[in-house]
Every structure is written in C-alpha cells, then in structure tokens.
Image (cartoon, rainbow, N blue to C red):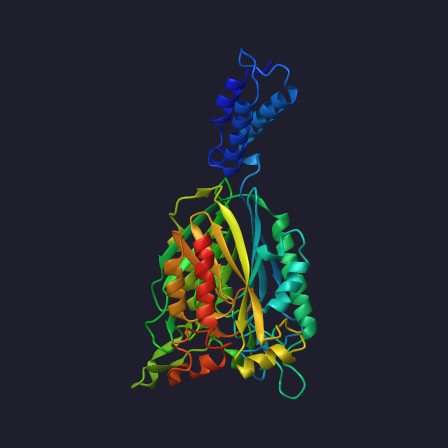
Length: 471
C-alpha cells in the first residue's frame, strides 16, 4: 500500500530546478491534489482499493526524479540555403530587377521552433526583400505538425536577393522566377522540420540593449530611430548555445540592388559573428524599419548635400562586414549576463486583419501578379498578425514596414519586460504610416505611394492594441 501523504510531499519537492518551475508539473500536481480531496482515502492515509490512483502517484513521482528528461520547454534550430543556382537577378523593390555577377555569402532560411507542454511555435527568417502571405501559406501547408497560425515567417529585407513578389512589369510579364519561389517554400518548410527534429530541453536568455556605434540611422531624420536590440538565446542544461535570435530595425541595403552582388548583405556577417562567438545557429528578424531606417554606411567625410545633411554611401562588402559584426557584438553584449529563464511561458495568439488597398500601384501587384494573391471583393487584403508571449517578453508581428513612430508606440503599449516587433512578417506589403503622416509632406511622398493606404497604420495600431489588451 502507498502512503499518499509521503508521496505528495516528495512530489512537491522535485530534484530538478527546471521541473520545480514547470507550469506543466504544477498543473499536474494540482490535479492530483484535487483528486485526493474529492475521493475517499483510507484512514491510515493509504490508497487501498484505488490501484489506478496509486499508479498515477507513483508514475508522477518517477517523472519528478527524471529532471530535465521530463517534458519541458524545448528549442530546435534548422537552416537551409536558398541561394539560387545559377544566380538570379535581384530586386530592391517594385520596378526592374538588376543582374548580378557574383555572390557574397549565402541566402538562408532559418527556423527556431519553440515547444512547451501546450504550444509549439515556429519563427522563420528568410533572406529576401519580402515574403508575402501567399508564399507563407504554402510553407505552412508543408508543415502540418505545427498549427498554421503558429508559424510566423519574416523577411530580412535584403535588397540583394531575387524577387519573391512576382511584381507585374506592366507588359503582361513579371520580375520573378516562379520555380525559385516554389523551391524557397520547400526549403523554408524543410528548415522548420529540421528544427522540429532538433528539439531539445532548453532555457532562455532574453535581453534588450541599446546599441552603440555607427550601425543604423534614419535617412529622413537621422536621429529618429530605435536603438534597442532584442535578443533571444536558447541554451542547453550544460550551457551550450542552441541558437540566438537578433531583432533590430534596419534596412540591409549596404550593397543595394545595383551592386551586381547577390547577398544577405549585413545579415550574413552578423550571423557568422554570433555563431563564431556564441556557438549554435543565429537568425535575424527585422523590426519597425520603415521610412527609412537603414544601415549607416554613410561616408561622413564625403557629404552630398551639406545643407540638408546627406552623405555619399560606402556600398562595399567590407562595410557589410563592419556593420554586421558590430551589431552582432552589441547583441551579444546585451545578452551576456542575463539570467536564464527555465520553462518560460509560451503562448501564441493570432488574428486575421483586413487592410483596404487604396494605392493603385499596390493593387496592381495584388491583382496582376501570377502568384494569385488572396484578395477581398471590397479591394482589401487580409493578413495574419501574431502576438507571442515568451517568458518575460512579448512579440508582435507587423505585416510590412512600419515607420519608427508606430514601432515606438506599440512597444510602449506592450506588456512584456522585453517587447519585440517582427516587421515584414506573415506579409510584406509596403510601408505602414499613420494617417497624419500619409501624403502630408513631400519627404514622405514615396513611402505614402508605396503603402496600402491612409488607414493602414491606424488599423494595425487598433488591432494590435486589442490583442495586447486581451492578453
């Protein structure tokens, strides 16, 4: 006969600190206690006549002794190369693509899969200008192991990669390679499956730090940008790094589409530096980098307009390396001494948001691209927005390039100790402005024209605040 009181006392003090903080373990123990309270127990404290209950108690006792081998928070990383062979022309936006003669680094699809006792989430980064939902949904269909709404896919926004929008060229054709896009979808799905196969018990370090040095600036107003870098780093029980995710708002356009080079731009050196210094795999998710938070490759000794404060740029691979490595060093500095979070809470929520398309130029892409973008009869599109809770952080996805004032505002309203924005994620349809900025002054003429419409920013803010309020 098992004495349930001694068993429950043992269960309340599991050997592993990870198990002690496990939400799953706590809920299971609460269920046992409730069962004890509800059922008849023999006077001597035993469970005579209740063999199933006895087995349940003994089984849970064994699980408690197993420590990290018991079900707990897990992380896996996966990676696939998506460099086209032979090389394809690259796209910096709507308009003609540019021929390339060489590559500098490989384009990658990277995946970080997070799993708790109740939830599995995949975060995917692809080295592309953008990755619209019509392609993202292809990837999701190839990974039935994870709910579609729990797969978030973001583009790094390198301006040195092939077009994955299939922009109409106005002559009945388009600027993309459909076979390449299909292959990228398969490889991105394979990266997620690789990460699923690599899942292992993990703890997290999550950090926010202010970067120092000449890394980014706002081309329209140099000092108006978010200097905060956010870092999520997963480590094993032995302290080995599994993977590091860097979240920062920046245009990876040091080289630009006209350099004749296919490249992940500064993101390649950033990943390489982190992996050399910390181990594991590194990945990058962009932030609210619209209008126009770009890499600071200015040649400050060579101004182009001293009155307006413009400089000529250094568009070289060496400058990609400098900026990427400096951002990597700042990210690692931010996360270096952060305490580990064992069994962090993981929750993924999503909602479909409808955005009117007022721009004739943007609607032409939706209506005439051979990708057959999903669209609504009222000339609108529907995008997925996610709000993730991960330990003491919140992550909000943005389906485009939000301007920095929107990014600052949303971060201020979020409820995490660390608040991350994943821009160009789940969709990538142009700039996102508030209505007071939309077509209000000449400097924003371009970003207004390459935007879905005047209300895009207002709708995003309203829907995001509702999700945050419901959390």
